[in-house]
Image (tube, protein in one colour):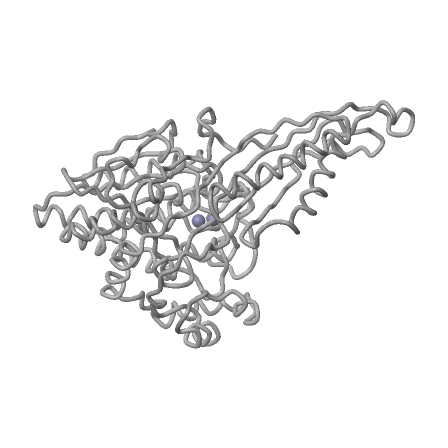
Length: 467
Ligand SMILES: [Zn+2]
Ligand SMILES: [Zn+2]
């Protein structure tokens, strides 16, 4: 494995900073590296031009590594600069979620396992699945809906973070919708009785939803944004308005039920204002089905590989970014573990970066937030890890993550993730009984329930419509 090539790949993707379903240059760069390393690549899978699969080996088991590589809007930021400082003359996008590292780290794991298969002559297939549009677009949900993972025995992925851990706990289901209100424009003073305000309908929808919040579960979340307020003129009755909503719940049935209640608020608001409302589905993410067997396999691998080690210079670099947050804020967002609480607290106060592996713990607690990895976990036993790539306390979707994305510390976290995931895959290849145990747990957890993608069959992959 060529470490320089992989770090260079991550930096190259950082530079492209392409958002969901536009990751053409990022894909080209990754495919180039995969082909260089002897993988066979198929592009444009599941109706997504920026989705691809790279395959090496033959027969069973089939182990998939999931790569992400999309960037975020509003995250333009220079590398290594300790304050918010966008790159001039660049698009307002950036890798605020570390997906440049995520993609290259998954490739590191796949290349390592390929070399292992080559060395041992063992039977087995390693696939690197290029999954576009995680931040917005639900790329993996379309892959799962398309039956892409039907031959996969285990799916392994990771996410850059500020802690080293094996992820446990579930993520939320999430449905995203647009409400497009249509009314009638009129002179707001001269003939207001002839106007029907789409903006009023949008506002009343939000008022209704804000009252609804009192009567939902603590594990539910609802967020909205105005995409169109109908113009800038107060003396015009606004005839068009658009809202975008995210509705999140613990699992898919609860999410669908809560979404219906939100839709009723929009319909009620339309009725009150004499306007009409179009409900347009945008995207849907399923909750995560944990797999404790795979979590243990990854934990064993992580213990064996150890956590990243840093030079004095890297520690100083990380400290300078840690100093952009208050200790009070850092302490307000520590990992929720049953044990090692004091060690975690001390680490967060005293050190610039996390330098140990969080405890081996399993739970099904719902974590706030959603990912399309959830959809994969409904169709194949799936596991995720985190490695420390950024200064302690730095939050995802921040300029601090973008700025630190090309640092040698971030590269170390990425390579460590690749190493741990590859070691776990090799363990699975050598111990098929562990795969069987993971599958047995998977079947037991589903209890006969089958995956039903939250995205309706007639909705195809698309860039989120901002109109
Ligand atoms: Zn993100
Ligand atoms: Zn992310």
